[in-house]
Length: 273
Image 1 (spheres, rainbow, N blue to C red):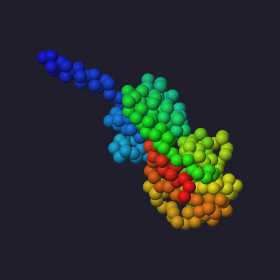
Image 2: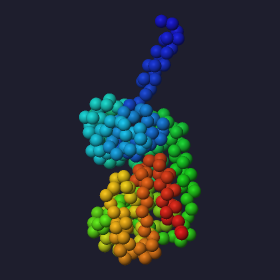
Image 3: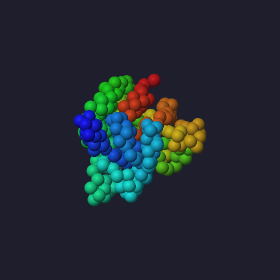
């Protein structure tokens, strides 16, 4: 065997051992891994990992709140990355000597810190720094509103407002964006990040602006016109001031590097006319 052949074999062996076999337990983590340029190291993801399109071709190991341990192990991962709500799954995987990383993806700072941690873990520090810089740039370019006001961000568009209205509370990146824009969150309780309200609660909060995060892809059967009419029927300052709007973007709910896009989009929505 000549020297050139030996060198090629060594390169192949080192490359094989260097490559990770990563499993993502949430759509946000899937996006971050692709953003770090490590999408080719992903061997499986959770359901609803829709971005980028390449992620849709990967095997699914279950929902992001209830991943299947057997399916995870069957893919022989060298690294499983989950969020704080995956703690029980990650603890179980340690018994099988599988390396795990747990990320916290609530606030903007959490997202940036988690990108840095994952970048360091998979030797993508340079790529991580670029993603973090993009988020910081979006923050620095926010224009403060001239007339600070209270804003309520609602998850999902519904025609029936009697119950089950999810809104952005504290300790979540939507709250950060409201504050960065120079406004205040209409929901004041610090104990809950994603409270569930009914129409009476909304009236009591009496926000000056309501932004509804709608996704036609996941809520295709909602009559948008009728739903918006129901929101304007509530006696709130937002209805009186004609400050109720619907924002439909696929990245809004995802705490990944694409939060930079969410910062730009929502801060623009909160600007004065």
